[in-house]
Amino acid sequence: MRRRRPPKKLILLYERLNGYFGPLRWWPGETPFEVICGAILTQNTAWHNVEKAIGNLKKVEICSFKGIRETSEEQIATLIRPSGYYHIKTARLKAFVSFLEHEYGGDMKKMFAEETISLREKLLGVKGIGEETADSILLYAGGKPVFVVDAYTRRVLCRHGLISEGVSASYAAVQQFFMGNLEPDVELFNQFHALFVNLGKKFCRKVPLCRLGCPLYGTPFSEEGERSCRMGPQPGNGNRILPCRA
Ligand code: SF4
Image (cartoon, rainbow, N blue to C red):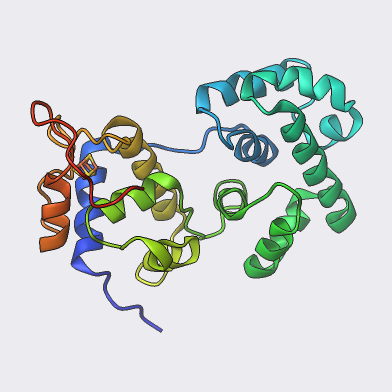
């Protein structure tokens, strides 16, 4: 069955961002297990801290199922300290490894051979794995066509009037906004998510830098979106009220 063509505003959004940032080839990681470690360690911290933590795990060659399973919590916590919340994150790494062992005998290929919806449900049952982490694991480690929604994505869509606050900005609703309108394409979902992350870091911060070269500035997604974007704080006009607090 052929999917209908994506709405113009979604094509416009992608084209503007892709044209500005180009191919981003996210997520870094030499193995699927390393990608999963990154997805768990990146919760509530900046990526450069995760890189240090993963670098430490790799230095002593324990960034693997066997390595994490056989290493003491104390040692793992010391190694991943740069990622913050290191005791909690150690417990999360251990919980994931225990899940992998009990459900799939420690075999990642077996895990990713499972049907996507069923695997997603199971991942969500692992302590410390929420929707964004589960979907990052599915997309970036497993190569499954699942759209990852993060705070940057919500913020951009909200500020441009493409979604509104409240229920329509729920994880599931935002994910459906993309997955209901796009072909299930791993590369596209990978790049789209990476584009939002880069946009959020560079321009669409808590105080947005709309007029400092943001590729979405003035993009007419809708009358509401156009107005919302221009109401943001700008150099020289102070911090005006934003229509969205995302
Ligand atoms: S134009 Fe402003 S509100 Fe829109 S994405 Fe850029 S920084 Fe965010």
